[in-house]
Amino acid sequence: METEIEEKIESRSPAHTDRRIGFSERAFFMLVLLVLLAALAVVLVLSMGMGASKIGFREVLGALLNAHGAGGTNSVILFEIRLPRVLASALVGAALSVAGLLFQGLFRNPMADPYVIGSSGGAALGAGIGLFLLPRFTFLGFGATATMAFAGSVATMALVYWLARIGGRVPVVTLLLAGFAVSTMLSYSTYFLVVLDDNFGLRTRVLASWLTGVIAVPRWSQLEVTAVMIGCGLIFCLPLARRLNTLSLGDDYARQVGMQVEKTHLAIILTGSLITAAAVSLGGVISFVGLVVPHMARLVMGPNHVRLLPVTAIAGAIFLVLADTLARTVLAPSEIPVGLLTAFIGGPFFLYLLRRTRREYAL
Amino acid sequence: MTSLLEFTGVSFSYEERSVLEGVSFCVEAGECGALIGPNGIGKTTLLRLAAGILASSKGTVSLAGRSMNTLRRGEAARVVALVPQRFEVPFDFTVEQIVEQGRTPYLGLFGGFKHRDHLAVERALHLADIVSLRRRIFNELSGGERQRVKIALGLAQEPRLLLLDEPTQSLDLGRQLELLGLIRALSDEGVTILAAMHDLQLIEGTFSSVLLLEPDQELRKGPPQDILQPEILERAFDCPPRSHPKLSGTNWLQLEKTP
Image (tube, rainbow over all chains, first blue to last red; front, side):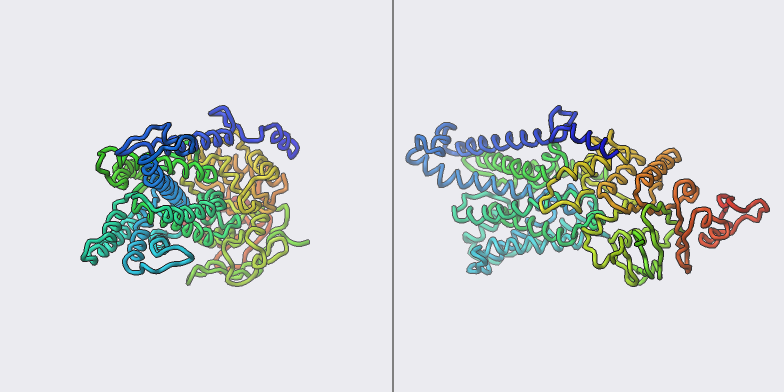
């Protein structure tokens, strides 16, 4: 028997063959990654060219490659305004999508999303507190906004995790109800900070934009801090991805095969909160990205988190760069908050998923 | 010779409610044991203690001669695998992706598969006879097929002891018999098995020993023909027999709960 099975394994190609599509799963994964990376590059360049002042694809590309530098005004527009903004969109999109993937794996529930479960709201409140009450606070070189956003996100996740879990399971109903209640409290607490500020100054405007989800033009220093946070978060995700597969089979099963379940849950909460906080400190509360993108990625790649992780990150970046480009061009010269746009796209999608989930898991 | 699994005076309680009290028994390598007892007596709890998911409040659970308390979870998972009764999978994992999770105790930080891991998964798929199902979505399988996948998942751990919790539950007669055939085949392959069984009619012919948990009594263990006796089962399951002169010997199947 042993030899027979050995022979069968030897006779197989190095990667497993998928009969449906006719080539190996690994080759398909690599192809999807390459296509997505190419699409991201094209979308970034196209997006940089679009806006109140249109700049051609070749000119943008040339300026980026420093071949025939776009002189004067265009150079300022491209490097001081458009480039930081599209990079911010890409980072926020990747972060929120991966956070959604992590939380869905943690709760074993496709409805989990940083916005739906209140993690984004917690980060926004934390960031607001940092901005208003602790403006001089720093921690390990990170400013009050980023640090407090992280603290707010972790605290909210811990609360929702505690509220929504019943005997090791997280039913859709308790997750959505706990998320709704906590999010609502957080949003109004953040509004309260706005009310406290009599002058309706810059900080209030920043806070108000956080609540609707606007990717403003960030400072390069701000972009660097966020990129470091998201980069670290994505690296932490690497060992978590396979563990999310095992956790999908239930906490008891994961425990049985030797996983330290509580520690893994904590690692997922901290990592998810870190990247949510980074995304929120850059773009505010942008809804449903973490719901739509992992779902789409799952349709293409299947549920294996090891492969879903990079696909979700790149697809999330593409999604939000496109959404933000649309947000600043569709009613040009005025802009609409990108959070409004993702709510328009994500809201109906959320309802569709809710309906499907109700059928499959008996809501 | 050291027993593969040994319980010595093991007690366990869920908060206030005591489930097991001073349970002692051994399972030797190569044995195929059926664990029986009335509902709520603690069969699942006993299996979970044996798998190291729960820790006993008193007494010692030993696995291959080592106390469970001194074994790390990963180490225990290389010796014993528990196939749970309930198993819900929220996403559309294929059978192969599910069975691959059984390799978790052997994987490093990033979880890369080595040749040996692929081999163990193949072996598990073959032993459970589900090679043809490998690309199918687990949630779309029938009850009997799912049961086989769960057993393959346990086998992928390459355990010396396989624990099955009610493997024939909610299967029709044909699938029950198929599953018993699989249990016999695994036993012939040298896998030691301990299965909590609800249906006593399925025990003889497949299991080499029976472990009976009964209220306020020590765990009783012996060959099926010794344990599956009317007077023993009557007391254990609290079901007086019909007063019928022909009821004797192996006619225990005709036991009936009196109103």
